[in-house]
Image (tube, rainbow, N blue to C red; front, side, top):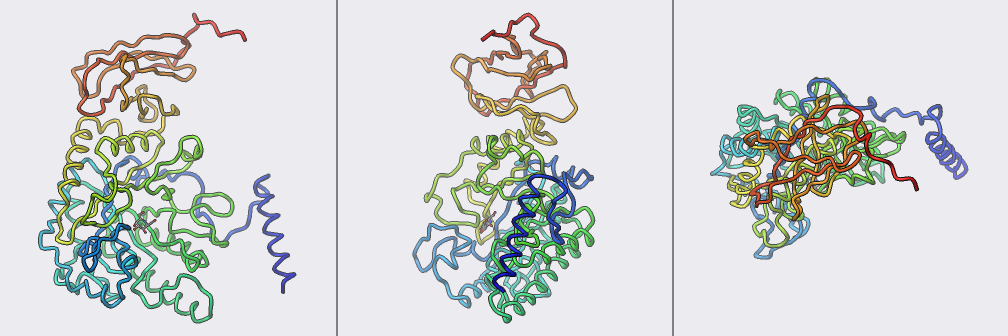
Length: 476
Ligand code: FHN
């Protein structure tokens, strides 16, 4: 037996080594990536051009808000059940307290529209297992709370009415379901877990069927061995959702391949439609250079690590609107989406700080959103002053400026063949800014020295041409 296992491991190793060297030795996979490269259909193009989304974590955990029996737990509020060791039955009884009397879906959607997001991703079921829709596959749902109504439907209707796409977050990890397993160690585990997977599959089909405008499924809680050993189920779920709801988008977190490899399969191909592993961080422009090969999204908290509502926001640094805007600009400049999280309270309201952040970001988006929506990586990396973004196949670039030097000179290094013609403020009076060619493919943009209330955006017009002939290259 040992020998057989050794032989299998050796052949897998050799196949893998071979795969790196040539295409002829690709590892045969039944449950690997379902296609290669970027999707270019209308639904995916829309998802990509949206660029900025609102994440919402809302569930029973919003009721205690990180405090249990008078004690504040600093860990993520949505993990309170485990950090405070709350017995299952006690936690589950929170369903009888779920009654967000101040919840107004239209108000939420207006706030999101004013902030400038084009999509919203809502937790339909987080790790605690509570369902925000009246699922026929479990009683542990909003229909059995004092609130009773289909909260998910209210949100989908209200957000769609504001022109905002709605995506569904779904945690495969489920602390409530008796058949959930972290690993499959016995035949009993295997039987129970396959019942669980049937349950989750039914729920996913229910969501895709009953909410026909859903644009994407955002999977989470898929890192345990039990899921990794069920690459086939993850493969089938991706297929099923796309059959039930053509055009729907699935994140990479759902997927595991035949060998339990996640996100990217054993041949290095991204599984699902976009890379969703960037959590509370953006890709590193140097280390993660391949990032522009695939679509991707980074999700971000406003505090350090609170997704659900936590009563005490003094525990960690609270990011400012400008810090968050910088992340959004940075993500766009690297060809990715930015999903900013909000954690409403148990009564259905957003805390004051979240509202203020949304207002400031919205003010900036109203003026400068053109530098974000439908913009992409323009093959120019981060500069000292900020980020370049632009639309593909145009002769314009946006400079989103976060750091203004005391001499007011923004240094611009252009690629060979790009000649800069003109610079103006986006949303300004059209007056041109002084653009000085200082050497081959090097310019200084003279930024008026003043205090900017929000990061300004400058539009650069350029043409393709042979610039800089008059400059000599150094002979070294
Ligand atoms: O454990 C969760 C966490 O609560 C939150 O939902 C984030 C969002 O990306 N996902 C998990 C951690 O990766």
